[in-house]
Amino acid sequence: MEPKHIEMIQSTAKDCMLFRDMSVEELSALLTCLDFRVRSFGRNDIINMAGDPFEGIGVVVDGQVAVVKENVAGERLVFDILGRGELFGEMAAFTGVRKWPATIIANSDCTVMYVPADKLVGQCSNSCIAHTRLIMNMLGILSRKALTLNRQLEYLSIKSIRGRIASFLLEQYKKHGKTTFMLTMNRNELADFLNVARPSLSREMCRMRDEGMIDFHRSSVRIRDVEALRAAAQGLN
Amino acid sequence: MEPKHIEMIQSTAKDCMLFRDMSVEELSALLTCLDFRVRSFGRNDIINMAGDPFEGIGVVVDGQVAVVKENVAGERLVFDILGRGELFGEMAAFTGVRKWPATIIANSDCTVMYVPADKLVGQCSNSCIAHTRLIMNMLGILSRKALTLNRQLEYLSIKSIRGRIASFLLEQYKKHGKTTFMLTMNRNELADFLNVARPSLSREMCRMRDEGMIDFHRSSVRIRDVEALRAAAQGLN
DNA sequence: TCAAATCCGTAACTATAGTTACAAAAAGCA
DNA sequence: TGCTTTTTGTAACTATAGTTACGGATTTGA
Image (tube, rainbow over all chains, first blue to last red; front, side, top):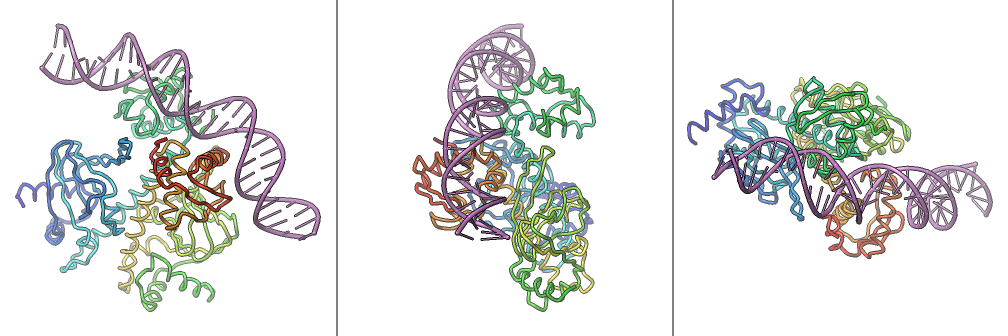
């Protein structure tokens, strides 16, 4: 293990849900008994391939990775984008799944730390306090994960494109706190995210503009009629 | 607490993931320190309403409940059907959410046991072994939940009704290990589950029958051409 | 700075799914 | 058993979204 890795992990751990509420000492003790490994990847490298044998949970130490799933037709569905301190493989770890359920791809040059699943689950020999906390943190992470999935499910359960756009924009509005904001996705990505065809998305957005609900140009959006948007999100009108 | 309840819970606990791998003694000790409550409901009763204050995890002791979500337009999306020994509210418990994220409805007369969230999370005063095991079981349950949601997300990301039906039937086929099996949902429920209109579901199922992929009558289904189904699930043909 | 690549809106056409209504079959029940 | 309720398939019609193609705007990068 190179020293720069240790340092990087220590500093990442501060922002990592998995190691939350631990003192530096606890963390050090924990890290020694977790028996982790570190690997680095270049942009677009495949970090883990769906179906490959699952070894353990991954923590993004540096850079950005994407969790994707591909069907046989070759369509790629982006499930999640993860940054520093975020986890992947946590669902597989506790269900005894032996294969990666999704593919992990490096969105940029990145460094990943792997923790063997059995080290997480098993009681460590020093039975450190930090290990207990680790488990509780894990519970929180998994729960949050489930809630996020739940919310995404709500998106896809909306049947009309207009409803999905409206819900999405309302969430952005809430997030930014302003009626004018920039989208972080281009039309293609947004269409993928909302699981609709790109031209259909454009068409519907223009209709909504024509009706005076919103205004937009490229990635900048302005909400003109919040109430109308709310109604649209609920499938009315 | 009525004795019949205690007995019912003890017997349910045997089949309950939350209490897995515990001896009768451990279970008894655990139950005393969990401070649970028991309530009974009649068919179609609302057990917990989305938005109502969240008290604790629910365990189905007897009967069947449905986890649903409704939008203002009144459309009802069935997220899950739970039987004896299954849990609800486990996601809310560990994320500090104070409101029920979904509505729970009694599918039949049923009995439910509630365990306060803080009793699960906090160390019990007797720090019993069973409590540790409870937490580990909880990890497994949450992971599995997340995987299930993931799978449902995959369902809804399929754009065609035919693809959804095919995926659903393939999963049932895999689950039963036989090409002939009974569905546990009627057409209405299945349509809800797949998030499509009921007549559209019927129509598509009939088309698939006409094309020789499947055979069915009411809730009994026979898969006639697995490969064709696989192709359909992937959006081909 | 200019050419290439990408992004975005648009339109015509097609395909798919939703809506509504109804009747036959099955199940529940008095 | 016979009546009622529920479940299911079906059909005609409508609405919505996907497909394909194209051109202008914008960005990228040599």
